[in-house]
Length: 265
Ligand SMILES: C[S@@+](CC[C@H](N)C(=O)[O-])C[C@H]1O[C@@H](n2cnc3c(N)ncnc32)[C@H](O)[C@@H]1O
Image (cartoon, rainbow, N blue to C red):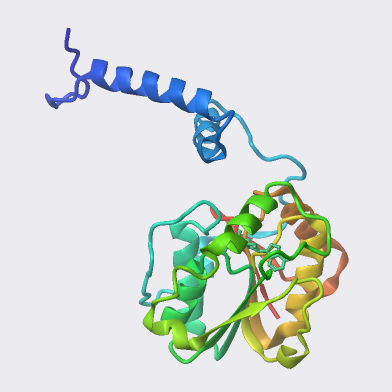
């Protein structure tokens, strides 16, 4: 039996799609228990049925639209395919446009991971020195981390750190720093950084600490960007609280349709 889907005589057979979806869903559901890699697929499937994967507080930051956040400039997109732990392609587009328009001389990223965003910063800010900080191999975080953070830390420490820019032409403008973002000595960079990207550990304690460190780094007129707002409980709670209780964070905005938050200092 062949049931055609679509109204214009497409050759898609519904039974073929149904069979593949059924087998795929069953496989994903079964494998999600032993395999972490399969879990995001199951969460995406659950979201189709109205499941809200967010736990913790609702985002309360004032919002801005993407067209207000991202300047209309030409950008370069390096390494467009994202891995779990990277920013989305849309978020990368916004970050690249911000960097390309602002032409920062110094960029500081907390949380290198595989270096996809680091590489894009360097590609879109041709005059910039890009610094990116991550935990050294075999070190243990000083503050509490979320259990899922251990996965990213493990992959980073296991060899992924900076892999995306290792052979890139922009490599010479990228400096990899090793340290714990809570205890790192930021004094050589204090008030000199034009663009700070906070994307390290996602626990409340770390986001509170990293956000305050980001302010210390920021030169007058700098932009600070955070990732994972509205997605990770610790990030959402920390940024909601900083915005509500600390006037230095009062102008922070959530870019609607993304998990980015921005603050012009
Ligand atoms: C979500 S990943 C960063 C993703 C990356 N910024 C990107 O855009 O692709 C988080 C990174 O933060 C690092 N990290 C976690 N805790 C840290 C800490 N206390 N100090 C420095 N880096 C940390 C992890 O090792 C991991 O590489």
